[in-house]
Length: 303
Image 1 (cartoon, one colour):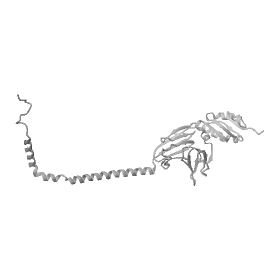
Image 2 (cartoon, helix red, strand yellow; image 1 turned 60 degrees about the vertical axis):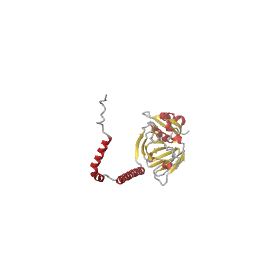
Image 3 (tube, helix red, strand yellow; image 1 turned 90 degrees about the horizontal axis):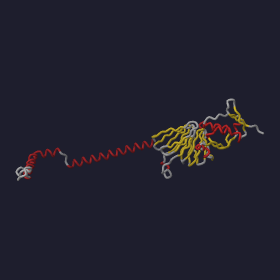
Image 4 (cartoon, helix red, strand yellow; image 1 turned 45 degrees about the horizontal axis):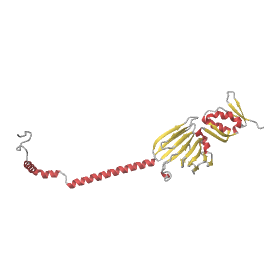
C-alpha cells in the first residue's frame, strides 16, 4: 500500500529540471551582465579602498597618540593639583594625619597646615603653629631621586624642601621659622642668596633678614610635645610661661626680677599649673596671690 505522505515520483522536481531553469535565468540576464559589471567595483578598486581605510585608521591612531602624549607633557609641565586638604588643631590640642601618599603630619597646639598634592610635587603650607613631617618616599627614591615627587613646606617666607625623612617646623613671631631634623636632610631657603642644608640632629632659626646657621640640637626635646611633654633647658622663666600658654590659659604674673630666672626640667603638658606651684621647690622664688587669686611669682632677695 502506498504511503500518502510521500510525493509521487511524477511530482518530485528533478535535477535536470533545475538545470534547465538556471540556464534559462542566465540567458535572460546575459544582456544585462555588462551593465551590472559596470556598476560593481573591480577587484583592484576593492583592494585600493581597503588600503586607504587602513592608512586612515593608522593616521587616526597616530594622531590620538600624539594628542595624548602632548596632553600628558603639558600636564607634567604645569604640575596641576589633584587633591587639597586642610588640617587644624585648636589651643591645647594635637593630632596626626596620614596623607594619601603615606606621609604623616603631626600638628602641635593651635596649628594649621594646608596640603596640595600635585602631579609631580607635594606642597604643604604651615599657616600657623608647629608640625612634624614624616615624608613617605617612592620605592625608587634611593636609585632615582630625581624622579621623586618633591615635598616642600612653606612657612611664611621660608621654604623647606625634604631630602630625607622626618623634620619639624615651627612658626615664630616676626615671621621667623625654626626647623629641626630628626632623620635625613632638608634644604631651607628663605629668599637669601643661598639655601642652607640641615642634617639629622641639627636645628636653625631663620628670619626675613638672615638665613640662620645650623647648630646641634636635642631634637627629641624639641618634639617632646608628641608625647604630651615639654622640656626646658636653662630657659628664662618668662619664656617658660609663654611656652606653656601655647597649650592653654595659664593664670600667673611674674615680677621683673623673676622673669629672667632660668629653668630646666621636663614637665607634663596636662599639668601646666603644677609647674607654677612647684617653682619654689627648685628656684629662688616665692609664690604669692593677687587680689583675684592669680599666682604671682617674686624672686627672693639675695642672701
